[in-house]
Image (cartoon, rainbow, N blue to C red; front, top):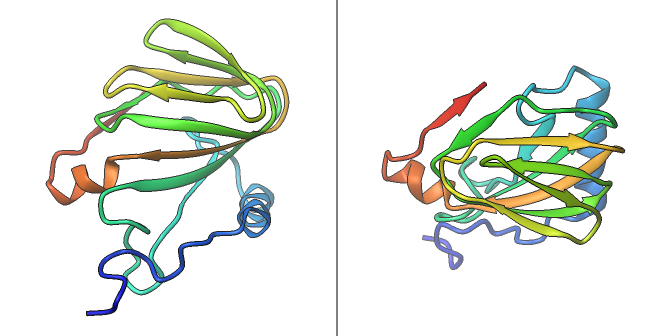
Length: 140
């Protein structure tokens, strides 16, 4: 086994390259109703998550976008890299802007609304739940 175990040998995913990849996704197709354009950071050796127990993601939401309601069993921590908007989580609303952090607890419905184009980094225990066969989601 490699010295890094099941964790990705690449543990630096530069923001500039990730942002460029999100822009390319946006140029080549419409946004997902629940997530906009969203990518998961992966282990290039296995194609699985970058860490065996934590899933890490980055997503782009266009200006004036409102996601469809979404809920999942993983609790998710969001970090705002760019833009402003509002997170509606379980019936409560929270304004967000650059460098803000907010959490969507397990199975509470989430909708995101943007005032301007937004980039959100997020991480959750999704990888562990998937490995155990426990993860589920509901869209809409």
